[in-house]
Image (cartoon, rainbow, N blue to C red; front, side, top):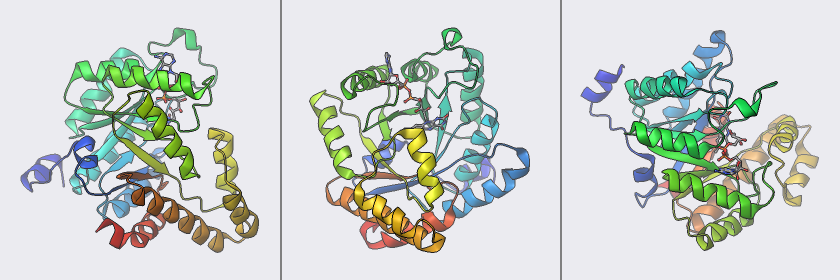
Length: 299
Ligand code: FAD
């Protein structure tokens, strides 16, 4: 179904902030685009299968170097055609103003109304002193000037790996919010107390935009090693014991990882968090299992 037909069918594209503020618990999923064109169809198929679960919205990540950027917009268009509100990620560190302008036009043409504005990480050999954008807050400003998008940003309950302290990080967040960021999505965390503590710090700092809690169901031991290397996350003993016990039994590890993530989400909803984003990593089986486990809670 193309964009015109989606509109004709009355499919509504909602602002993420309206979804989060609707008073109903929101559960969203994430997909990432392929690096090469031969994988595009299989990623699209996985995204469509997740979309059939009718999540509150779905986010599509963006290749930092821009190599796979056109796929983000195409996957967003497909999700919208299926009646799911898309949230397109967009990074800026190694981009130019012209390129960002082109990306915004491409997203608008595909019916995308929500963008997660990110700095991104420097590609190998990139000289950061030449960057047009130094921080996500500058991209947020640019998108706001462009107009018509609901803008989100990333936040890090355990602090961004480059940040000297959580306090400095929160000052960076304040700039992002002042620039026009309307909601925040967290980096994954495995101990909910870390999020509750972070939310308290945001509250004390007067940052009042809604925060979507990012949860990663870890379904293999290899995934854990990658995650720690990328994010430097703290892993609770309770979680490490699961990996020790089931890490070499793939089916058991998957079941335990989904159960752990489900338990985290139940605790978040029970403590008044209204929006949870699941890093579902192009895995319809994992997304479906989480949603099934929460069926009555989401009703
Ligand atoms: P920023 O907001 O710019 O923050 C980076 C650092 O700079 C922080 O330490 C912050 O405290 C500091 N800072 C921020 N603003 C200022 C300022 N004005 N002055 C001084 N210091 C400041 N990467 C991808 O490539 N593609 C994706 O799709 C993607 N999606 C993500 C989704 C989520 C929810 C998260 C949490 C991360 C995602 N990332 C993605 C990774 C992200 O690009 C990296 O973590 C990157 O290093 C920082 O991006 P940011 O937008 O948080 O940067």
